[in-house]
Length: 369
Image (cartoon, rainbow, N blue to C red):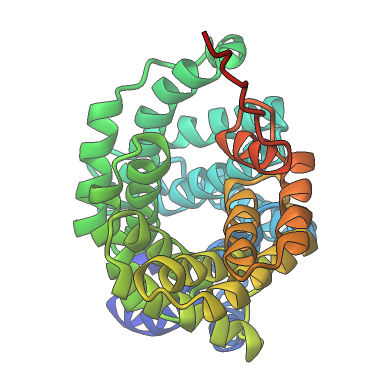
């Protein structure tokens, strides 16, 4: 089995770490070398698919890599199935089948192709449940089990309309899933970083426990400083946890790398970084000149990515209007508030702020008795 080959692990470690650090040229050169050595094995194709997946991650709405990603994962599945048909106890083939189907399910879920996602998930679960115990890859298989245990319950809770699709799956267990993810993040070799990513994601998005997500984001960003997704999450979680100096350093790094055209650094990461720097300069340093510069950058990045209904965009408009008012540039303040009212929902407090500025409530004259 290649996955238990210690020499291969040493070779693969540098390449996989390079991939997570967005050094795709180095990583994929090594993965292609693996393909030349072992064209009959699913691993090189899976690794090329995983590399393509991380090209998608900085902007999950970008579908430019979807076809390439699916092609690599389909190749991994085809080759792994051939090995599996030769030997039904080939745990390595089962691992790649579960992994490739699992990643395809993740993409289909992001694209809201829920029937396809369910089919891929069912295939992944088949190989997980049947072949994951009592073998040398048990720690790697546990990653898939952990995700299933957590998300089977979470999807039912958050998306009731999808419950019929999950009716044919066994019941999950959120607490067990989190416990298993932690175990994988400590003990697995190939799935360790993915487990750490999901721990961070679940704490931040699903559980809204920013304090628990923050140290994981800090570790991942420090370990892979050129990964735009990890660095963005680190800046965001540092900011919401009140660690403004860390948020400032991370945000400035994001903008610097975006300017230098580092792989994966684009407007979406720039939005967050610009907002955090604008906020820090306005409220921590009382430097309206720099704050204005960063909030204006934030508007440009948001408009380029069609994310003009987000809180960060609306809050930037509000802050720019406030700065303009302080500078006695009342026409500019009105212009920002008019844009805010067009973008925000009427129940949004920022909408109310803009409305009151543009149309202040008239004071009623009290009648003298």
